[in-house]
Amino acid sequence: MNMPLRDQTLESLVFDNSFVRQLPADPQPDNYRRQVSNACYSRVKPTIVARPKVVACSREVTELLNLQEEVCSSKLFAEIFVGNKLLPGMDPFAMCYGGHQFGSWAGQLGDGRAINLAEVINNQKERWVLQLKGAGPTPYSRRADGLAVLRSSVREFLCSEAMHHLGIPTTRALSVITTGELVTRDMFYDGHPKDEPGAVVCRVAPSFLRFGNFEILTARGETALLQKLVDYTIRTDFPHLGEPSVASYIEWFKEICRTTAAMIIHWMRVGFVHGVMNTDNMSILGLTIDYGPYGWLEGYDARWTPNTTDAHGRRYCFSNQPHIGQWNLLQLANAIYPLVQSAEPLQEALNTYNTLFLTGWNDMMAGKLGLMQFSPETDDALIGELVEILQLVETDMTIFFRNLACLSTDSTPHDGDGLPAALVEAFYKEEEITIDYRERLNSWLNGYRQRLQQDNLPDALRRQKMNNINPRYVLRNYLAQQAIDKAEAGDFSMVGELLELVRAPYNEQPDKAHFAVKRPEWARNRAGCSMLSCSS
Image (tube, rainbow, N blue to C red):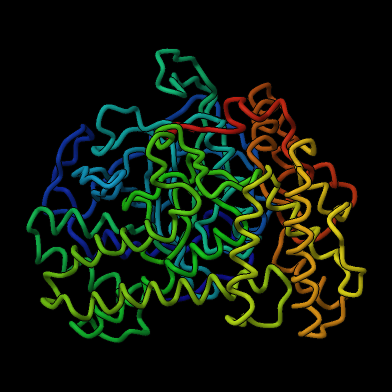
């Protein structure tokens, strides 16, 4: 294949649509809601909209595609990435998949409001799938309209890029574009719908395949197609595993276990809660995918979930995410069992997930505390006690760990009368700090200092190490909501400001220090700032 020059125009993008070329399509060309059997996708055109306008564009993602950043301001860019026009070589489609939702098999789900435009091959010979979210109905839309609103689109766009810059595996976002049309949404499903500005996000990833793409085929007994999809996936996204075979299927599953564990450890590191870890929202590449009712821990609460639908059962709360990751992998193991015909190697991989996660968790927490390495003799108790203490008084996770780096190893031990001022900044209600709490935290701090002294790492070097792991800035829900409020009024400036902020989440950025403070009290229970729905 002849590769293009580095700085491409839109018209010179190189497409290689292997998914539609190598896998069977739904034979029905008409776009109406239906069950789709013996096919991996349905071809479908995006819906034409009235007045597309670019809200924001990621320069880093344009670079992935070898595009010049200037193309983002062109009329053609807006028309293509809202779905109004297709470039030659684009072959849009929606994928068929199923999934377990909140622990129960939901049957066929599919891309109900996502349309894959094409696969781009860049100058580095990387494959990037372009996908529009909110570009209209597909055969998998069920009773929905396939559209998206500005608030959810801004949240997905910003969070995709924020996660990437935090060093967390994720799908990316190229752009968010308003449609010039209104979309009716009942945000909390409580009988109060309203019209909201419509928008489309262009998501970018090497693949958008989910656990559910394989589950649906096994559930329907379509084993030959299952093998074809798995073989395609290994050849396309896991070529280092060699030609498809039973042995490579097992190695493939092991790798998914490893990358899923690594992804969730990263979530726990920064206090991210996905909110809806259904199997149809789990990437086979170990990428964070489908940003809906997500959030960051502000007050450290292991039982917190941002999802209103999950408020009662808390299945997808912060502390459950590692367990749910393994449960979801078990469903994938069941899906590929017909190809392996042996439970033992699949179970071994699942067991390895436990080991990988525990080891990764310990190493990650040691890193957050600035330790040179995890030492079980001292650090099991040190970490366990801290996790308990953090939940006794409402404590901002991001601020606490960032400011913990300010602690000096040669300070005089505290006697329980006071607390380091840097840590006091992390408490939401200082009046809740009792004498017993101060004594317990100071006792922990004294033990922590002793542990740091064992490493004998200079404070400056330890602080640098901690500041490279503990972010100064995360995309707090209330910040995203403020940007959304302005964008809905036609002012997109804060979307751009937050995009710049999240590009350097570990840097101090003195002129942006106001974005690093605790959640304000007005945001505690406001819609969009605390709990969100799957419509968010």
